[in-house]
Amino acid sequence: MEYRLFMGEMDMIIVSACLAGIRCRYDGNSNYDEAVSRLVLEGHAIPLCPEQLGGLETPRKPCEICLENGKVIDSSGIDRTEGFQAGANETVRLAELWGVKCALLQERSPSCGVNKVYDGKFLSTLIPGKGITAKKLEEAGIRIYSVDEIEGFLFYCKK
Image (cartoon, rainbow, N blue to C red; front, side):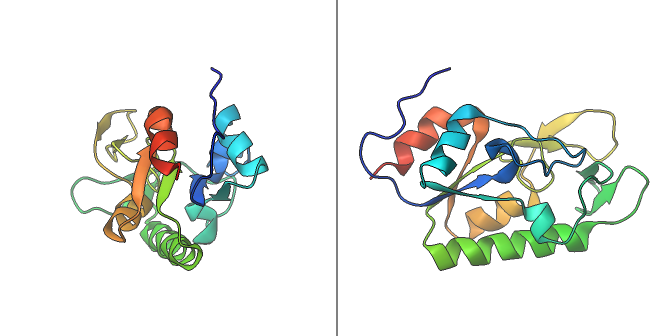
């Protein structure tokens, strides 16, 4: 899909690095999105991966948020919450340092999910909810959007 992105100035924004084509997903791949990549290449967006900022390796076992306790566990049952929280805190710190007002995030991620995440049972069941980074960005007053909402995101971020 073709978007007319750059008519006028935009505030600096953060995007999930995987959307910009950076191979930082749990499986070592990306979620490349052409419009997001163009935002980065034209200097309007900063790509960040909260999971890598939190010290998690790539590739890594898939992780999900457990409904019962809010912990992030990987598919072998290891608690990865500390790394996810550290990455979220660093993402918020950088966003505040750079004066970021909005972020475009990868849906379904235990870090970046904006509207839905997997339920923690590793059965591919999506539930309403936010990832750890998405919650912390929102709490810091940064408007968050899912890549599924890119048109609204682009409208909001234009000055």
